[in-house]
Image (cartoon, rainbow, N blue to C red; front, side, top):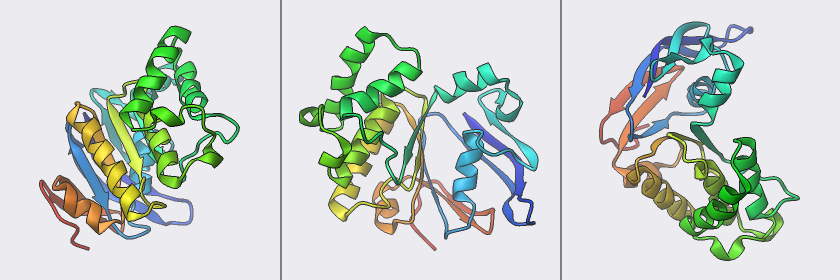
Length: 226
């Protein structure tokens, strides 16, 4: 599904964020990417989202070279990718329903689809009773579950989750990871970055370890070994 072919990223201050990275993410995989701050995890995710361009090498989504796509093709690709962030990135003046509906409107979905799908996806993440709550009325864990619902509502092929539990307590961390596992079980590919050893050890899924912009380990069913 995703293929990094000898990808390097060097910034203008000669900082090497990625160095000759080659790896593949297969459809329906759950891949965790771990590494200390500055190891290159976030840069790698930004490459998939075409928010950064490689200095050398290529990144493919299926048969498409991501960074050679035209704007319209890129917009179509991004609709196949859902994103979840550590800081939630919810619109503060919109309810849970409206935050998710906004993402659907941006993808060109109809009013009928929005009215049907938003309550369903909130039920899926256990927030059916919070449909009209504003972000300031939600706990951190609830905000992240709204963010997950927003990421999955357009039925993407892949979810990019960048430190999604970084601001959560252990109970909410467990709940969020269980939701991601459920989404993966339904056939969606998950690429997760995290510093949380407990999360990695509990998943028992593939773990890619990065250090100084390089992949130093790739374990099919790994543990947190930093």
